[in-house]
Figure 1 (cartoon, rainbow, N blue to C red):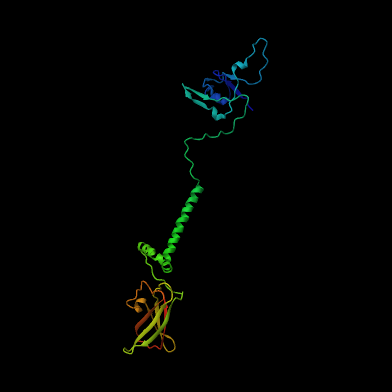
Figure 2 (cartoon, rainbow, N blue to C red; figure 1 turned 90 degrees about the horizontal axis):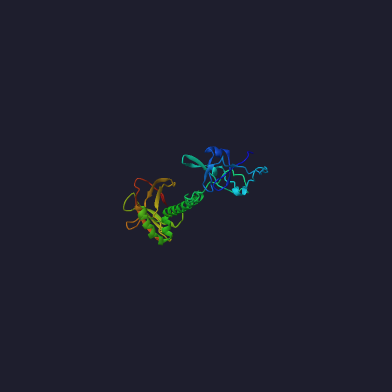
Length: 285
């Protein structure tokens, strides 16, 4: 280990531990960190080794009169040369007690910036907030989509919601229709008959009764009439839209009212065919 070197400030008699490279930076000129006196560190070098016995012809050295020796405990960065003053560069050092000599730390902690910006929320917290907002938005969109898709069923099973849904449909450009009874069995053909019109040759008269057993309105179905021969083979088949068989007073937009019946009477021109039977079904396209 190289021998440590020390120098004494002539202004306040404080002793500092120095390195050769520090003294070489400014030609030995340093600045006392205690009283700010600039002096030649090489010329003021001292030794802290045990004093040798005084010679008989030399007066004793009064070390107490020179002041208590101190040694800096700062690292090398604390002993950097001070800014040049009057064409000379000076190194500022700081004092520390000589009785507690300790090795300088490898790295000094960086000083905190008093003007540092406020700490922002962590990225994890920001992601959590974004996820929460996204979940709420997606939930609202899913609910809105479900209401739009099942608006007819909601209006039928929950009548108080119908006015609100109608106002929403005015904005969204949609409409509320009666439910379709495709497989629930509330709508049925109670009776049907196909007879030839005695007053017109080749003209058939189809009569039937549709009954709605549901407690809500049901959309008018399509009817499929199939004419068959004596072997029950299909001769001709025709689909009848609600406007083909419903009376002029029927409100197709409102559907068949709850617990109601609809009488059907349709004239069919079958002069070009020969038939022996028929089948009548209802369906929704």
